[in-house]
Image (cartoon, rainbow, N blue to C red; front, side, top):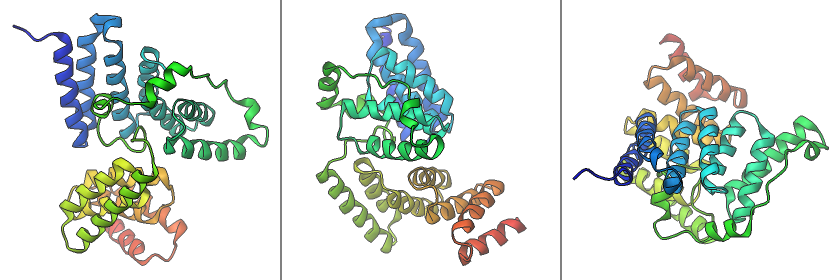
Length: 303
């Protein structure tokens, strides 16, 4: 007997999540698209599942830098299930990358109405406030679009996630958008895991260190943890993963020297010399006498 559309869509979604875990964002997006096509006929009956798939595909677009596609998918997910935290955070991040700071601010503020404990949203509001103040001056608030009022029912629905919510609602490793809620205990655990990863690096066990850093990042998206894991990926010759981690680190700290240097190293190995040189030049604006960066630039100019 043929599987039902819902069962087939669930299988495709799981396959998509697995591709996402491996950093294969294009194939993951294609699997989510196939799952969505299966569910289209079900209409409202599959609204929640379609919303999840759109949010997952949006995460792929965000990772690949396709910010407008990310915005479109997040908006579609939110039409189906209003006030979802993950699509709001991902759309905010995409708006931020597109320099649509007012729209990003509105989304970050909306997330905080749904759940005021989400650190990524607090950080986003702070960044957007600074950007808007610099761009529009002291009256920047007067130019904002209206911030929607989140009904109590939505706050209740999202504040107590079900036991299986993480696997159902997001592809893994979608930091910083849609990571788990920040708590003091979670942050402390993340710090311990990062330190365990650092000890493993000292012992030369980079593969195991990656596991520790990955666990840490699920709890707390920290720039240093990304750059540490990127170093492991470089050692393991997983250059695409190293580029992705450095890009995440630079999203949190745009002038981070380690992230720029390690991404340049990875891009060099991937033979993307132009992008590698651009990263080194950005780094040298911050540290013009960085000898390692100057040496790498010489190598790149000879490549």
